[in-house]
Length: 273
Image (cartoon, rainbow, N blue to C red; front, side, top):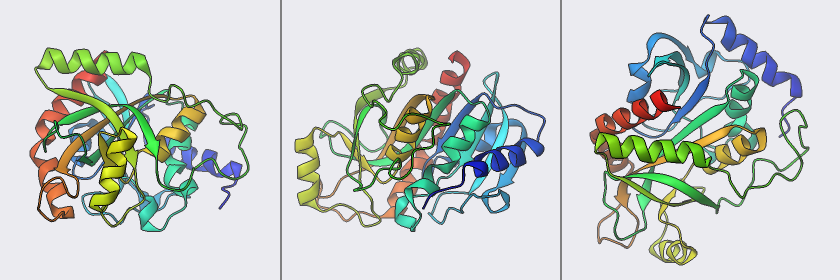
């Protein structure tokens, strides 16, 4: 599905009409991590259902609205919940908000997610800085006609995640006494959880965590020239590592439990950007 080039401006103009604030940084919040959006001051709330060309989130733990407000001395556009490929949307639809952020003048983006741990040294509740990713979704959001207003036909993916922002995150975590793992995120389409055999394969690939989001937005952000930081919350150990069944409820429960630590870290990072 190709999105008309005029749509992005229409959406950006609509969002701008709802507030006098001019966001300088974007955040997309993953499953169970939406509490950060409630911390913004002078906040304006815009449900996805009201925004032209947006699609609605159907995933549990996603409020499905934009919050524009202030946090850590910055004006933030925060997405309380994302849409996923497994919800039946196209790659262009799920990454549409990233291009709208570019139209709004946002220069830096923080992506967050809840994920499963592949690295045996990781535990539920750990936070991880994404250093690189593997796209195992079988799709790429840049397939189709290239929109030259955002980037080139064949963008380089050597440095998707901005080193300067990663350094800020490391220092912020250290100063706050928050443990911050680092590793590779592999994306899987879902919505079924992975099989133990697939998990073994992903470990052989060198992935440390697995999830059902983030990579499409990261690719589009890189294509647009947006500086990018990505953080994962490990909510469970992946299939076959422990002899226990996996559930979406566990993902939300653990994300809720670590939300205070997560908010503390994100707020400190924002102050330093």
